[in-house]
Length: 315
Image (cartoon, rainbow, N blue to C red; front, side, top):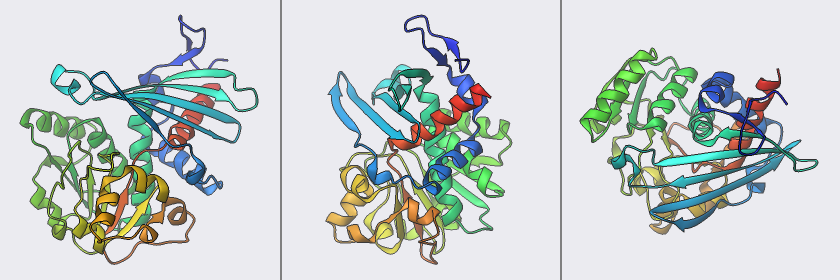
């Protein structure tokens, strides 16, 4: 198989992060994720993410199977790593054929995550944001914040991208990166949320990042920073007055603190949650209320993009 260079430890082809990004760009990743849903894949069929305590963080195991392929991502979350100059999340991915479960390819899982998470958010935002959305606010300064800004710029013609962060150095670096990639980025504050058409929350925060009352009717809010039931980026006030789209209801009720806490506080009901597949297939639409997408990151998204990486290598 010519999909990558041989890995000396296993003999399997290995696709580096740079090669993953060369083969599949942000907007192609969006199309791959959306195509999986349009082709009939049901995220409710995805196995639940397994999480165990490991060292100074968590070890995550994320398998998925659909079509001719199977795959599994092994990811680690180490909250103290950024202070050491290391990534908070690291991962590797193994792609197998479904017929024999023979390993076919290894990929840089961190690069895959950086692609598939904003790709999924962009699928939702493309259906939820106003067609003429121009103003984006991104809360966060890490790789996901940067890649989400790029992904949103691919689905809307943005003329203002305000980044919000606590660390001045990281904020300045993120703005510089986005400007170099052609986006009209600047340093902002949470007060910019009041005028935003699109808001992305990509942080490790455990408490709401801003007063949800700031979000205007018709605005689209994407929150992807938490996959723990006791942590959230959005308050119940916003969740209670918004259309809330999730990848899968059961997953959201198990992992998404923004959803779980809003339900516990009586602002939201599980039946109110709209599956992303319904939005993509035209069974649900954006409203003139705030439109929220709460993403936790699911295994099928990794597989959809990994298959695209493999097929691009074969081509």
